[in-house]
Image 1 (cartoon, rainbow, N blue to C red):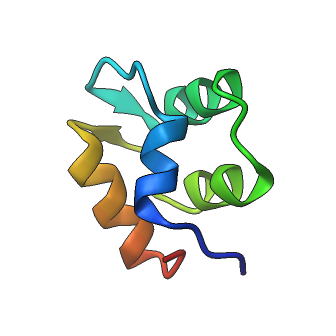
Image 2 (image 1 turned 120 degrees about the horizontal axis):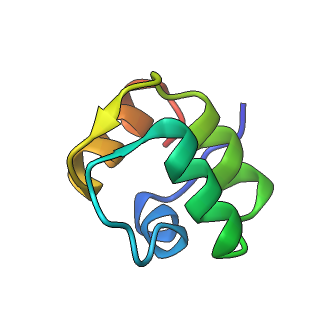
Length: 66
C-alpha cells in the first residue's frame, strides 16, 4: 500500500467544488495530473460525498494511506 502526503494530495484536488463524491475526486485528480499514489489513495476511500478537503484528508488517513 502506497502512502501520500496530505498536502500533496490537495494539490491534485485543486479547483474542487465540494461536495464531491469519490469518483468525482478521482476524475479531478486525474485532470490535475495526479500520480498513481494519489489515485490509489483516493480509490481506497469510501464512496460517499465529501464536503471539503479536510474530510478527504481524514478518510485518506483513516484508510492508512498517510
